[in-house]
Image 1 (tube, one colour):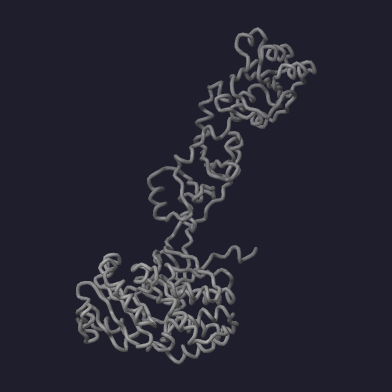
Image 2 (tube, helix red, strand yellow):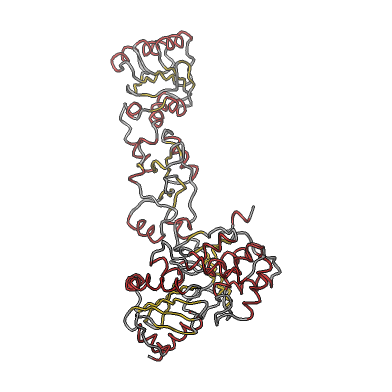
Length: 554
């Protein structure tokens, strides 16, 4: 069996509000894993990409990773039982035989396109069979004639079997013609044995259909007369009693099914917690699963919940639980590759953890390519180079190490670009504010940090142009209270970093925010309500450590 098709996908994913390093490291590391382990690793993103990252992906012809905002267990993580659906005009007997053969007590009903129409259970079949006194069952259900032929194992001797029974009742005509004359009417379905006179009487009285039981020999005159009178003539191998029992099982299964709108169904994306709540309140054994468009996929039951397969993750560029994709607690974290401080993330089992004090996660990924002897394609090299230039502010950030610069220079040769020229293009693309909303700019690179019971958020934007930095400050300043409320934190900050001047103007909001930043950096509030921090350009190495140390002392 092809393992590629059976192996579950492993998601390589960065933090929420992903920056260029978060996206590019996910793409580059999933590419490395696919080449060294197997092609079941997928680069994903936990949020929308920003303008800078969009430029980088387009610049090097890379596909935007699939967005995944929640990795909680879903129906698609359960072993969905692929019970085949049957058409609504299928006979009741065929439905029972299918359930018997698949050992399921529920049978989905679909249309010709596979769209879910309803569900029938063994209980529904039992009720229909017990409530079998209605002699108009076939006509009331508009039963296809082919259904009757199928169920009775019959052979059509005369007439057309392409239509439907739309009127008439079922009559047993095993006795004499005299009795038959008093019980049947024109348009009825008559069950007869091998008596010539009874067969003749039924046809002459206008029967819509005559079923000759016990595979009796039918005279040519009877066949000829049936054709002349437009009477459907069927021969069945079963005796009259068996035919009388079987014929009602030719009714279309749609007659007794529970229609889709009355069913409890689930989508592949339905959270398992929601499924458990529904299953705890009802006695149904099986529940259909279908797509958003209504296409039937299979059935699940309570037993399937025992075989839940948790999503598998490799985290890059973060190890803080506040920065993880929603639902990470319900997933299996296999690896972490990061360059930040050790955070609050906890795992249920040992994981591969690689953390180095460098300026960019892609620097670490580059080392792993080198260690495993895997050739780096030019477009992958371009992505990793872009991430390093972005995170290190083109080698100006104090987080930049000689290892970062050496990796960037090597990657630049593979990608065939000049680092400084590419850096200018990247920063210009990222700082373009035309047509952008304050929310978009604020959360393009935003992270939440914790210290004890205190939660605070810090966003950052880098600008080559002082004019653009001032425009960004004017756009973001009135938005701070809304951002504070949206994120549910006590304090919120935004670093407007000048790449050329190597300084940051910091906007802030929230109770204690001014005191925290003033104490941490021994600075005072400017006339425009911000603080200017000369030489501070790194959130990871300068801003956050100083603030956490201050909180510890306070």
